[in-house]
Image (cartoon, rainbow, N blue to C red; front, side):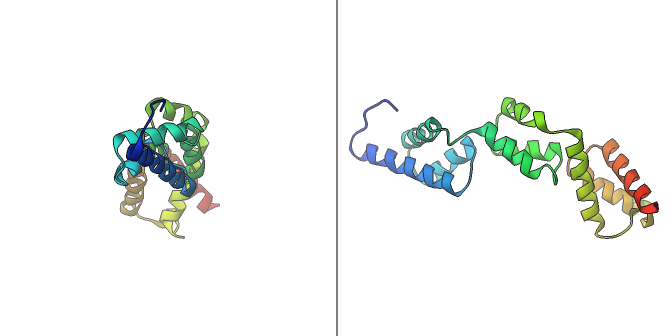
Length: 164
């Protein structure tokens, strides 16, 4: 960034920085997402690097903040495993994920599972379902990343609530 850029190269770097700022105005992004968008927009590697350094210098890109916000927003509807997978696909590093998940509690996972179970039941009673239908619900929740012991515990709680 300390290099002196001349002519068209300087103009491309300026446009790349402007594009990065506009992309960040639309929504918060991870470092990888922003870099991918700049490359797709046709900017050279040097211009993309300049733009990334520019927005990072102002603190506009922060993967930890992004991950914490993402977890906070989605923790009521998704399992820990699914959240981790989605954030990894967005380019968030493993050490950043570990920090971001420090505030994610077992109760958050159980709340998300309960919410998803009720949504999956669509007003039906779990206690009225046969063995095959219950297994389908268990398989669905397991595919969503919830552990089998937790799924069984929450389903048992749901059935006991229905009988009261």
